[in-house]
Image 1 (tube, protein in one colour):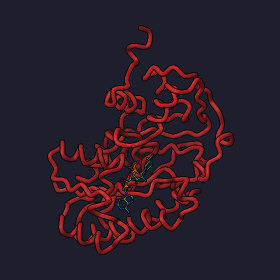
Image 2 (cartoon, rainbow, N blue to C red):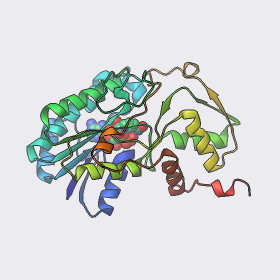
Image 3 (cartoon, rainbow, N blue to C red):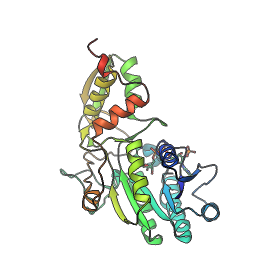
Image 4 (tube, helix red, strand yellow):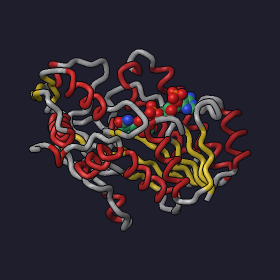
Length: 289
Ligand SMILES: NC(=O)c1ccc[n+]([C@@H]2O[C@H](COP(=O)([O-])OP(=O)(O)OC[C@H]3O[C@@H](n4cnc5c(N)ncnc54)[C@H](OP(=O)(O)O)[C@@H]3O)[C@@H](O)[C@H]2O)c1
């Protein structure tokens, strides 16, 4: 199958390209340089020249806090850029997998959000991603929306890397324990996105690592598996004010995977272990040595 990946140089896009190649697909890895999705003509030209059977759309404006004071850029990329990709995909008859986010929900629930729970994004970033979902649904028939959360991978800055750095350079590291979600490893997510792109299983999917935890729990597992020396302390979100509100509870129910008989992603702890092994930071066996 020929697959075109947008945002190919990003944390997720990089692993989607790598895995697609490993699976023997023909891949066009579109970085921003090859394809700036904010230009409709360029998007149409590149996608019609490549004629992919599937487009995995990973490009996004992901600066969640900066988006609060730059809504135009967030919407230009995440909403209308996604419309451009959706329109161009529709015109060549390609399946489109659009990667979206848990930030489309308000975070006030106390049980996992299914794909059919009403959305209520609280941040500019969340609103721009939700607008991208709606615009894609308007123009593309062969569409799968894949919402994910708390993503980390080899090719990018993320929470795990920050903890590895702080855990070695600080005596005490404080991490919020009142936001709950599901950490998701890019390699596990990439496999699920590729599986969607190979089938006519249109609809919305929640693709996150199995289980859930707080950021503090996540940090504690990173500290344990990487044998980091710093002391970890819990704190609350109000002690760390940020420009963009974060959903307090953003656990996603994987209902669509379940009822369509598709495999769920491995547990978040397994994703973390695999990631630490991949980047040479897994020290669990050495803890008591
Ligand atoms: N990271 C998370 O925790 C998380 C959680 C939920 C959902 N998601 C979603 O997952 C997807 C992938 O996220 P990620 O973590 O891989 O983000 P990322 O590392 O920031 O990658 C995004 C990529 O999009 C590219 N891009 C930005 N504007 C573009 C444009 N106008 N045209 C073409 N490419 C453009 C960026 O290129 P440059 O490198 O040139 O800027 C970057 O390579 C996004 O849709 C994001 O919304 C992420």
